[in-house]
Image (cartoon, rainbow, N blue to C red; front, side):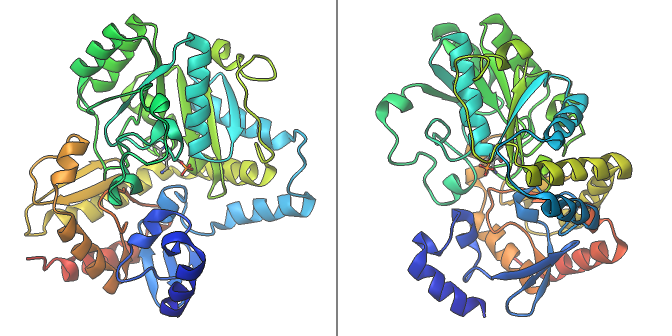
Amino acid sequence: MSSELWKEALRYFPGGVNSPVRAAVKPYPFYVSQGKGAYIYTEDGNSLIDYVLGYGPLILGHANEYVKEKVIEQIEKGWLFGIPSRVEIELARKISLHMPSIEKIRFVNSGTEATMNAIRLARGYTKRDKILKFNGNYHGAHDYALVDAGSAASEFGVPNSEGIPQEVLKTVIVCEYNDLQCVEKKLKNEDVAAVIVEPVMGNMGVIPPEKDFLKGLREITSTYNTLLIFDEVITGFRLSMGGGQEYFGVSADLTTLGKIIGGGFPIGAFGGKREIMDMLTPSGKVFNAGTFNANPISMTAGLATLEVMERENVIEKTTYVAEKVTEELERIKYPHVINRVKNMFQIFFGVEKVSNATEARRAKKEVYLKFQVNLMKNGVYFPPSQFESVFTSLAHYDDNVISDTVLAIKKSSELS
Ligand code: PMP
C-alpha cells in the first residue's frame, strides 16, 4: 500500500522523497509498480493515464517495445566500459543532423550537469564571469541555476536556494522572461558571458516566448559578444526534431539537452559551435569528465527513441493528443487560461494571461491542485504542481486514451 510505503519513506528520505516535486502529490504520493504505454499502475491497484511521463523524457510512453528490445540487446553486451563505444557516435550524428547548431557535443548524465558545464564553458570561452537567466526558468539544481528558479524550486517556495555563496549569486543576473529591454540594459552595462534561456518555458507551467523574443535575444547577444545558450532539456526533440531553435528559427551558440535524448534513462548533453566546444578537456582547458558520461544504455535508449520519432511522426501525433485534451480543458467553466506549444501545455486558473513567472505565480494554485486531485480520482495523472508542464506521448495517440481523458476532465471540472 502506498500509505505504508510513504510512512517508511519519511524515515529514510528528507521530505520522504528523492526529488521534491514527488512529494507534491496529495494527500501523499502514490507508489508506482509498473508503467506501460500511456498508463501507470500503482501499488494500490489503480491505473492512471500518465500526462507527466517522467517529467518529459517518455515521449513514446512507458516501456516502449522497440526501446526495450534495443536496451536489452545492449545489456547482453555489457552496460559500462569507461571506454568509447560505437553507439555514442551514432547518437551524436543523429542529434547534430537534426540540430545543425550542434557541431560538437559532450554527453553527461543530467540536465543539471549539462547547464552547469555549458555555463562554465561560456565563461571559459568569453573570459567573463556573469551569466543572465530569466525569472522562473529552471536549469537544474546547481548553484548558478538556483536563482529565481521555476519548477519544484518555485513549488516549494525556494526559488533562491539557501547554501549558495554570495560570491556566486553576484554573478547571476535575472530578467523577466519576454523582457528584451532588461536584457539589452544588462548586457550594455555589464560583461556577461552568456544568456541562458528556455525557448519555451516549461518550468512555470508552460509559457511561450512572445513573438521576436528569441530573435531579439539572438541579436542583442551577438551585439555584445555574449553567448546565447538555449536550454532545450525539455524542448529538444519535443517542439520539433530540431527543438526550439528549429521551431522558432533562431540558432544558439550552445545548446543543452537531456530527457528525450536518453529515452528515459539518465542523460544530459551540451553542444554547439566547434570552436567553443573544443575548449573542453581534453582538447581545451575547461574541465568536464564523468564516469557515466555517454554510458551505452542511455545512448542506446536515446538512439532508439529518436529512430522511432523519425519513423512515426511522433511530434505531430503527440501534438494532436494535446490539442484534443486542451479542447476539453477550454470548456471548463472556472475562469482560466491555457498555454500550449505543440505537445506541451498547462492550465492556469483565475488569471487572464500568463506570459512570465510573476504572472504564473498569481494563478490560483489551490484550484489547479483541486483539479489535479479530481483528475487522479478519475484515472488521469496531471503534474502535481502548477509549475510543471503537461506532456503527451505516442502511446496517448489512441482513441480510447483520448476519450477516457476527455471524460475524466468533464467529471473533474466542478471547481468552485
Ligand atoms: N533544464 C530544464 C529546462 C529542465 O526542465 C530541467 C529538468 N526538468 C533541467 C534543466 C535539469 O535536468 P535534470 O533534472 O535532468 O538535472
